[in-house]
Image (cartoon, rainbow, N blue to C red):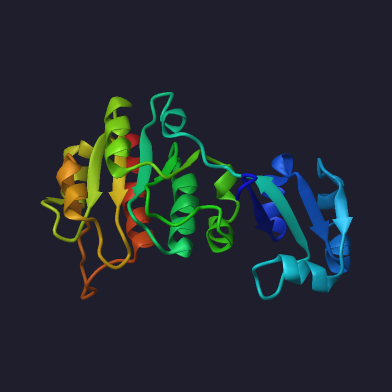
Length: 237
């Protein structure tokens, strides 16, 4: 990370990162299976043995190709330029799989950026990168601003700030019916185990609960993010 570069594993991630790659490695299987992908690389391809590629990779069973790319995170102000309408904000989110899934979901829902506040997992970690399924290169990703900085910047960009919590004062369905989700929105999404802290709830314009129709106690973070982001995306159409 000192050189502001990170490892990109597997053909899907390599394909999405391809224009930015500065190094690319392939074992004999990868050279054969992904010849067309390797031919399109903007950097030299270094052939390596399976054992060498396995030593370079984080996964137990590498998929034949591995790249090195510049870090993708951008400054908060840059990510929120151009009148954004939908931005998920991960607050102290620790699980890289969840964070990567939220980035992928945000991309699918048409979000303008994703912010991971300080104390959240690094979006460049291998598990997070794989969970994004390539979406890490599709929209701006911010890593490291404080919650206060993020909320201030979101409001300055014209976004209302909604916080998801099981004890929220507002029901998500009621907000949809009232048209409140049509406004440009930043969604605050909390830690997997403890949710959003009190200071985050206090900073929000509204605290919102997702209605649970059955007997489940709560929703997984990534699932809750998907529900909220698609509710906003639909209302903003």
